[in-house]
Length: 297
Image (cartoon, rainbow, N blue to C red; front, side, top):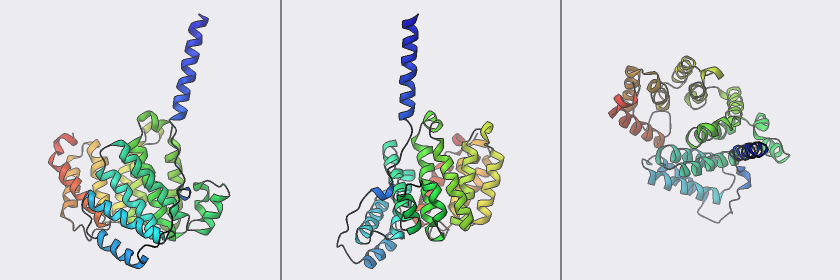
C-alpha cells in the first residue's frame, strides 16, 4: 500500500513539474542586441522598405521586406518605425506563411521582442522596465507615439497563445491573455480607434476563445466585431475576422459568404491594413469560400 502511494505521489510531483515547465516565458526584446553597422544611408533603406511594402504579396517577398527592415535597424538601432514593422511582419509570416508550429513560434517570439524594442525607445518606459517594473505595469508610461508597438505586441502574444499552445498549455498560460487586456486598456486610453478598430477586433476574439462559464460569449463577440467594422469600415481584417472566427463556428453561412465576398471585392492597396496583410486576407477569403460547405455548418 505504501509503495502504491509512493508511486502515486511521485507521479503527481512529476506531473506538476511538467506543467510548471509548460509555462511560457519570452526573452525581453531589449536583451536581444543588434550590432550597429555602417550600412547604407538609413533614408535610402527606408525608401527601399516603402517600395517593398507596396509590392510584397508572397512569403518570399515578405521575407525580403523583413530583411530590409533589419538592415534599417542595423543602420539606425533606435528607428521606431523599423522596429515595430519587423514585429508586424513577423506576425504575418507566422499567421499566413508558416505551416509548422516551430516556425510560427519563431516568428511570434521575434514579433514580441521587436515590439518591446520599439516600446523601449520611450525613455520613461525604458527607465521603468530597467528598474524591474514589468511591461504591463510600465505601459502607463507609453504614449500615442508607441501605440503600434503596443498593439502588435499583444497581437503577437495572442497569435502565440492561439496557434502554438495546446489546450492544456493555454490553461497554464492565461497570464498571456490577462496581460494583453492590460495593454488593450492602455491603448483604449490613448486612441480607441487604433488600427481601424483593432481593440474591438481583439475583444471579439477573446469572447470567442473563452468558454462561456468564464465570460465568453458569441453574442458579445458579434457586438465587438460590429464596433470594429463601424470604427474601420474599410479595413479588410474586420469582416474577414468576423467570418473566419465567428460565423464559421456559429453556422451563419450567409454572413460568412457575405463578409468574405466583400473582402474579395476591395482594393488591397486602399483598404486600411497594409498591402501585404490585405493580400493574405483576400487569399484566405478566396480559399475558404471555395470550401465554405466544409467550414460552416
